[in-house]
Amino acid sequence: DIQLTQSPSFLSASVGDRVTITCRASQGISSYLAWYQQKPGKAPKLLIYAASTLQSGVPSRFSGSGSGTEFTLTISSLQPEDFATYYCQQLNSYPRFTFGPGTKVDIK
Amino acid sequence: EVQLVESGGGLVQPGRSLRLSCAASGFTFDDYAMHWVRQAPGKGLEWVSGISWNSGSIGYADSVKGRFTISRDNAKNSLYLQMNSLRAEDTALYYCAKESGDYSPDYYYYYYMDVWGKGTTVTVSS
Image 1 (cartoon, rainbow over the protein chains, first blue to last red):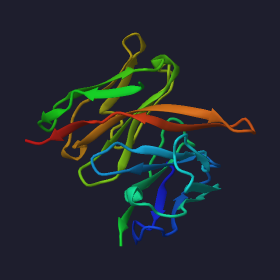
Image 2 (tube, rainbow over the protein chains, first blue to last red; image 1 turned 30 degrees about the horizontal axis):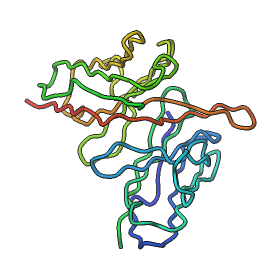
Image 3 (spheres, helix red, strand yellow; image 1 turned 45 degrees about the horizontal axis):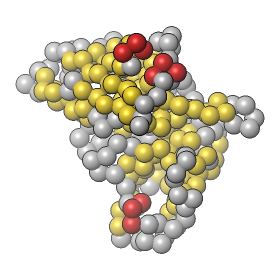
Image 4 (cartoon, rainbow over the protein chains, first blue to last red; image 1 turned 30 degrees about the vertical axis):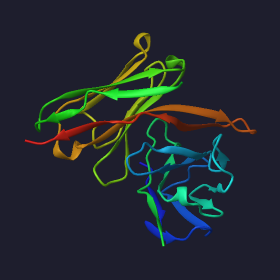
């Protein structure tokens, strides 16, 4: 099974900061990676798929990059509504689509 | 409006069974694969099971394999999860999610989960 790790697990940042979250896969998954944002008490929301394609309606301050085993999610200028937990998900081994453990972004 | 509504959760004793349902509306249900994802209290997301549009491809997480069965009824626009031999560690909020995808410029098909329900809570306790 493909395992995903995320770093950091937790980060504290201020509004306006540039934030980068890393997701690593235990084996190559090409660009079969998605990113989700989850706020407390809410369902996850798709941000990015195919490693770097922004889902419709998602602000352009979110971007994704990477392929193979290492991926990043970047928020170029953190906004108050971006404080949430972010998960990566591999979609390489159909239909077993595992998630990373999550990165919580909190207010400094 | 595209919508997924889960139901069937509740409090159940260890070893017993429960059947979750997910009612889909606002899209052509039988065009899409579907998934169950769960989240234990205070924990991260865990993919549980997925089923292709025609039930021809099905997968389970190792943690539920042999105990849970995913199915769908395209005529009723519904997804199901039959959960047997429930354990305390199955306690979670269970989401159903719609799988979609796009072709890249180089013709690779990339999947993602673009629509999620609000979830139904399963508590396994004596």
